[in-house]
Length: 277
Ligand code: A3P
Image 1 (tube, rainbow, N blue to C red):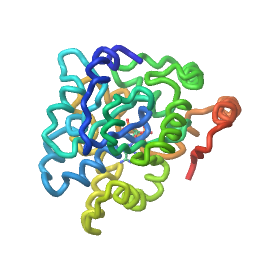
Image 2: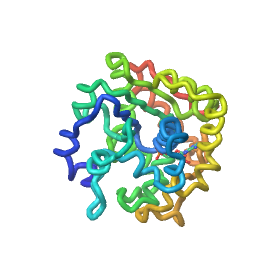
Image 3: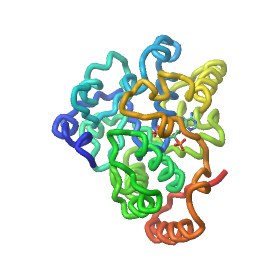
Image 4: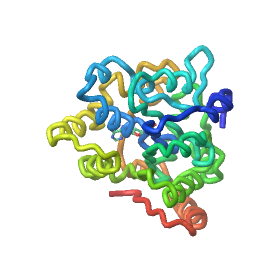
């Protein structure tokens, strides 16, 4: 962790969730913003369409554990959300989620992305985001990822910890970035089923079109261009939005080493990821 995610620790841990809060949980760069936009459109796209064009996604869906000096903390933003339900984002591994979310039996949407694309996306994010540690060169970054020495810890522990939680918390919907890419409409249907929502066919079409990569990329309220800590000259937030971009980064040797290490780390897991579709 870095201090941006620990400075407000007590308030975060004591955060009072409400029964209708919806928590969006992810390892960083797994598709958080994508799913946040989908949920925001599902709940508020018709009731308050002006939200989509006037409020950046990071204010519509506060990042619970963030605390940047001189900017509102995630807990303040979440507490002052006027919406019902409140949509709240976290990158916490499952064991750090404030206990009130479990006590209130909140619905949780977890999104996971295959490790190879996830680490590539995280690398570029760390290059352009001034509140993230400097990534250094790609090769050492990849090694650190394998060792779990990342902000928010090990990817392997994160995806497995949440996967295990799904067995005991029935209100946890576990999604995959690759499935969303393959068929956004199908995944939207599954999500609606979990949330107990039944939007019209027309509304679903409006949502899937609104959250297409190209549309989100040019939407200033979704693409993070309004956040000064990010330098888009280095790399844009909405970078490629693809499955398989890892092939442009991993050398053959790195890929072999990664696969071998992956097998060991994931040997007890029933989780299956797709690194290409
Ligand atoms: P890339 O860096 O591989 O392009 P997060 O929101 O968790 O930070 O994840 C960001 C990643 O999700 C980035 O991946 C970004 O491009 C991708 N992403 C965001 N919106 C997307 C969309 N509508 N379709 C596909 N990918 C999307």
